[in-house]
Length: 153
Image (cartoon, rainbow, N blue to C red; front, top):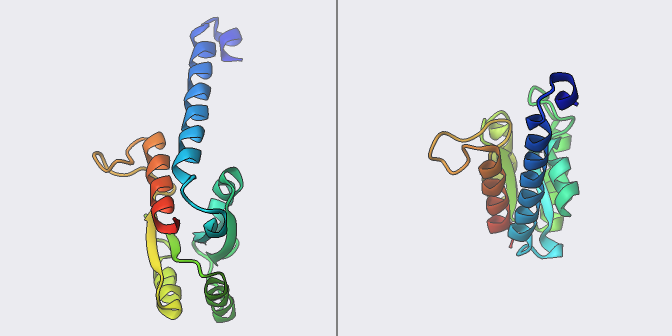
């Protein structure tokens, strides 16, 4: 513990405070996402980083545009065609893409192939600009939860 090493008890109280904030944030996100019915709790995302979110909040990862998690990877045309098929079979209304845009060309190509599907931008790996409503970690997570809930409810 830092409190033991430094002799500063403030580290313990700060850790407790932050843990409490994150527990409250998790509860708030759970509440935001409660509007999404079980049959719509399907995520198609640009890469696998959203697996943790899916596990935490009860979503099924139906597909990933860039398998393997690296934005440098190039999925094959067969993989993209299989993803289009999964999206059509599940009736997923949205693909969620990273605000940094690493895979957006591929996401747009998949969306064009599917047809009637929305591409929803989520904050990932970076906060939003000041005033964006996603300029802290907590606000970023709330903004993402609202975007997902709006797209899937």
